[in-house]
Amino acid sequence: MGTNYAVAPGMYLQEWLDDEQMTQQALADRLGISRKTVNGILKGTQPISQDTAIKLERVTSIPRDSWIRFEAKFREDLARLEDELKMASSADIITPSLGKFLRDKGLTTATKRNPGKLVSDFLNVVGYGSMDAYAKGVDCVFSSIATLKEAGKPVDPASMMAWISLGESAETPTTNGAKAYNEVSLRASLSSLRQRAATTDDMTLTDITHQLEQCGVTLQFISEPDQFPLHGITRWTKDGRPVIQMTGRRKKDGFIIWTLFHEIGHILNDGNVGITLSYIDEKQSSKSESEKRANAFAREVLMGPEGLSPYHDCKTSTKIQRIAQDRGDCPGVVVNLMHRKRMLDYSWCNDLLKDMTIPFKI
Image 1 (cartoon, one colour):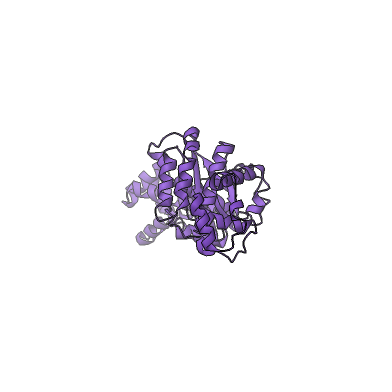
Image 2 (cartoon, rainbow, N blue to C red; image 1 turned 90 degrees about the vertical axis):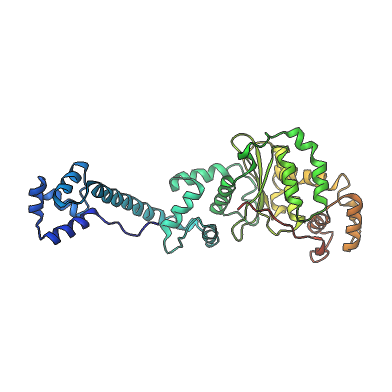
């Protein structure tokens, strides 16, 4: 853990001079260097060279590698402190919820009382060497996301970048020799995926994850910062494999299953186009043509061509559940869609929205 100060090797040399009751000029004479050089070493403005370290060892009996180590640590701390001072000017990009998130994950111990270290640790997480490089990276990631500015609850860029980076660093099947992505196989598995999603239990998401792995698709759940308004994203690895990264937000099957199939829609409809987002405020995100296609795909796969028409006069959980069972629909998805379409008051039939066991990676 870095200190908030840097100790010049000259401090150790000054202690030696005091103990020996020797003047700077006397030391300079013994070392065979100028008094100005000795004074610079004492002040920390003159670095200790390999040659000077050898001479210091002969005069002080302090090993040369110790002097070199003192010097290296001093220069390292100076550079770090200068960098943290520069980083502190960008501390506003770290929201309180993101700072707490990073601390909870053990990625930093810093708070806004140590803003430079907080920003520096954040850059370590997202993998950028400077704020300028990070700003370009943000522009690159977000440049193709037309829905970002349209959403009622905009995503904080720093939180988004940290969350994506955690997903990228998490151990996934793609790092263990998983199958290559196979679009034909994914399309062929839609029916069995829908069937498994219709009944939600403790193993539903684990089973679906394994099914997707057979098609070369990674599904991972990465916990998110507070007030992070996303259900999930689709991103692609460098070797062309799709990853569905989800937050598990709200933890109800109606939201999670819908988001999952929505993201599968992005994979099959859009291909490798970078990152696509699934917003909580889906009325806003649906303005995007890509989002419209993904929503239509999810409705078609999960509800069939009839959509919600079989439920048009349903006002009770019992009736919805009976029809859903007959059709092979997930009752939670039905209720979620009926709420969004204003076919049900938001306070009705929430007992059919079941909590899901989320297999978080991080």
